Image (tube, rainbow, N blue to C red; front, side, top):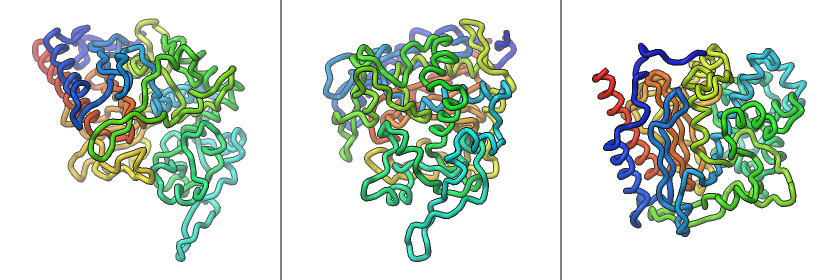
Length: 433
């Protein structure tokens, strides 16, 4: 089995953080989950872990919603949104390393999803009118995984949002037609733009395997990793433990609101909403620690000894796939629907700092001010959930909330402070070793 050796940097980190540091981290979280300031977060879950799959610190605080008195717990069910993309990319790369799917075979993509053969590109004429034009390149699986296929999200892309009116383009309706029957917003392979590509990857997995994503993920990923709560189709029991959705108003105050992705929550009598490989999962956020720690351990799940990916596959996933199309850290996130996302850089950096994209998550090009190493992989979920995996320092973290709009400053500030303390402890312990 492939694991870290004692010569690896930070491999000798203790199995848990010191009691004093854990108390300090709990105090930081309490600053945000108690009181009634404009920095208030109704409830949070947090976990830090290593490549052995075991948490070094794990904590839940606050309540299940701003209008709820029920305590937040590690067993609370969240809409994890784009955390789903990580599971979709792992499932896809399992098929790639088996030789069943090809990263650069447009013929295969079009044979599985013939809709992609004739998909058009949305443009504007000089007069400002919309026009659908032919694409000049064919779409590959690699393009879908690295978000260069040309798709966008209607909540981010103003052109796509306007094109969908007056009915509107809905990214989270629970109906596959809203995600699939839409044009590209860029020519394939020209630029990076975050969008619905991973929904297409999920559809490719479903059609190739003959199973729903829920069935496939449970068989190949979730059940072997002990991720028993994670599903596209939450049960009535799971719904009874669901965190409430909250919205932060312009004055900074939180108010309760409806869940954005509600169709799976309203399904009854065994109804199955189409599985969205880009955003469709519900579950306990902390269960994703096993999936992420498997990547820390080069594709091997340490608790079970089961291999999910080859080391070479994990290496390819962490390779910057868009080196010629860098993402500048200080460029604001595009916003067409400000009620869903804030137009602000998530982690302000010097203007020349860039980030890449792997298969399929962000790859840092520079160390962070908290301590993350260059090459760290990370991504997030729309309702302000964040994960990262730092393979250089053998540490991963997740933080989970249920707040809209995305890019919530108090959640990001809380994560920044916790990270800083954890990396400080890592450096101090390494000095002792």
